Length: 321
Image 1 (cartoon, one colour):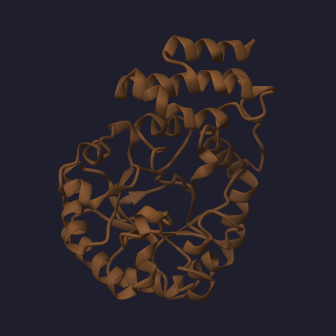
Image 2 (cartoon, rainbow, N blue to C red; image 1 turned 135 degrees about the vertical axis):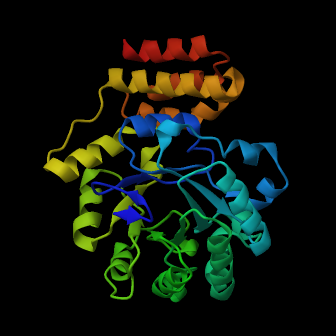
């Protein structure tokens, strides 16, 4: 697969942009375990143009993360253009437009998946962003707003005409949020339609190596993007890539490996954000790292209340015993 001048030598397995998840500390462990392309947390265009500290901080990445994209979202075309220009100053490898976020606080303001209900505005915004930056522009979106308006083929065709270099399709409608089952058949129809010339990346319900292979082989996508299944489980990149290459299933990481990695991510987070913030933000990862550990609930409650790095690391070490 190739996105503009970014070439992937093998089938790419990509980390999805997720709010409050894909910060620098988590991206570093995902990269170490094989993520081929990663994105920042999605960034509000209005926050960038108003120089909001939290939004600006999300632009930060390290050279070893490349190739990396910065994803922006918003409802106003002029704001999105300026946000793309600000993002370009950080020199990422690409700019991604979020036309898929289903959460109420984004959609209610006309951003994310709300643009699926106004294709002319989506097209206008995409064209303006493409023209405003020298970087390749990609899009992440969904099948449509609801079951009755699954217009993803037209979306892909129209945005391709405006110059996007790839499209990632989450196999759900906005109406589904994250429930139900992702419909990969429509992703496959887009990928295999003769009018589509850009790479099509599939997303949704890729939770293990087997589901990754099904999307690749049955639906013909050019790459896959994995979101929620990565949380506390960065090994999924390594395991998926090994399976796609060899047909062999690597074993799940041992408890010792999981503890080593959660310590590493915690250390990155503390270095970047300080101990107090890191301890709060790491809480969402513990269930993934310790999935299947007997009686984990009692340990988790203590982790959530831990007030220092040494305290939470001590709990990790207790579980190891």
